[in-house]
Image 1 (cartoon, rainbow, N blue to C red):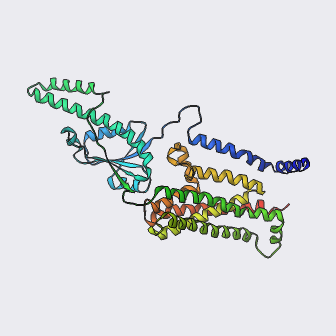
Image 2: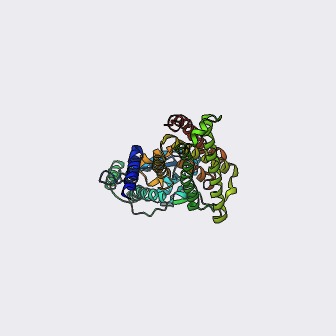
Image 3: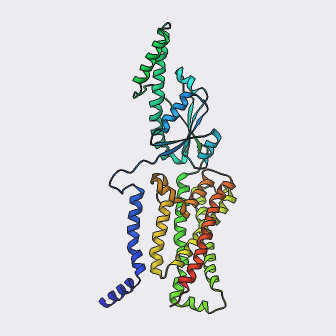
Length: 405
């Protein structure tokens, strides 16, 4: 028994890269989650500013000042835009919401009428909306309430003393402004909230996230298992026999990729059909876009699985390596951790993952209901990732897998 134990330990530690990867996995995951939840540096992580498109249809100095005050806060980044363009940004998932100041805002403020302003948002981003609403309303109440109170006092003074010298009146108004510099308005303010994405849909957000996120995560593991068959054939001597046959060397790899693509498409199709039968996911909402996204996702994942097999030199290496890479990609890509709670730099690097583009594509179909042209952008990126990874796989396949000792 002891001799068997020693023998197994020698085999394990003989593969230095495999041992390194085995210990690297927990370290990588600990580092990833520490970064994601702001646990490094011993202090509180900085607040990620929220980009807020603002539409000024009133075109008055009062609204311009309010917008400037909003922009001066560290929590918000103002983007001046038109109404239709702002709506498109929200509908395509590029922004949480847009703030609209309608014509007549300044007049309504002076006459204490209901203020014509509206915050349009994406219902799918409810948690982020809560953060935006909290910061925005606090800022608006500070500025609008104070402005309203100053205007009321100035109006009352002017009405009570109609014959007062204009220079004296100006001094009084300046004093009023100075008194309210750090003040807080007590007037009630209602901000109209309107969902422009999801308000008429019956789609289940949780179901879409579950199907898209989990499907890509599990698909990556499945195709990696198929790709690892190359290493198993190498270890068992089957690959050597294939090389002596009339089959071209690259065709061995291409055959594995084709098999992975077929299995990937089948697996994704089954997952979506199950979601349709069991939970009522509306597959007929845009069949051409759905077919395109399934093929693009399957191609990217199957190419990635073969890539992992081509860069490893043993099954132990590919098991550890695939675990690290797939879990990290899934975490930063949105399969495991919601993107909005991550620091800004991690949200930026999410675009390098297959998960991110696949999940966004399926969201564009089932939630945002975008046109085929918009969905095809995500599919094009996935095809690009698949082609790039395939080229590297061919090179690494010749260098690593075909190097028979």
